[in-house]
Figure 1 (cartoon, helix red, strand yellow):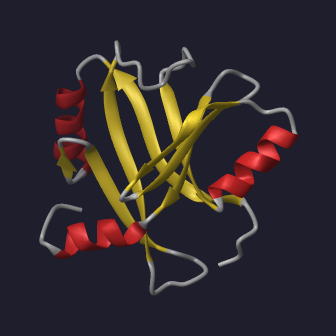
Figure 2 (spheres, rainbow, N blue to C red):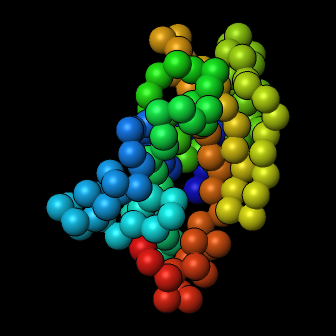
Length: 141
């Protein structure tokens, strides 16, 4: 995979709703989502290297959640990226404000920006092997 800073796919879809647990259960019952406390995770293969897994997180949040702030929108899309630091440098050079600092977890690095229409965008440089290990232990997918 190239180190050129860019979005490589969708990493997550997050949205607000009246009753997150009830809605997760509805998606599980009627659409077959395999949900857990965080929502559902979808496993695919990376286009550049089909031997490597890729994951997308789908999650519901309560209407009073601050997760999408400072945006006042009811949803947020997480984009998978490579070279997060390089991408943030490019964005800053183009006058795009980065919200907060890079957050680092065992499953990847995260940063946030706001698009011109006020949508909060989450940028994620994933460590997919963490999810591979989770799934290999017999947990839900």
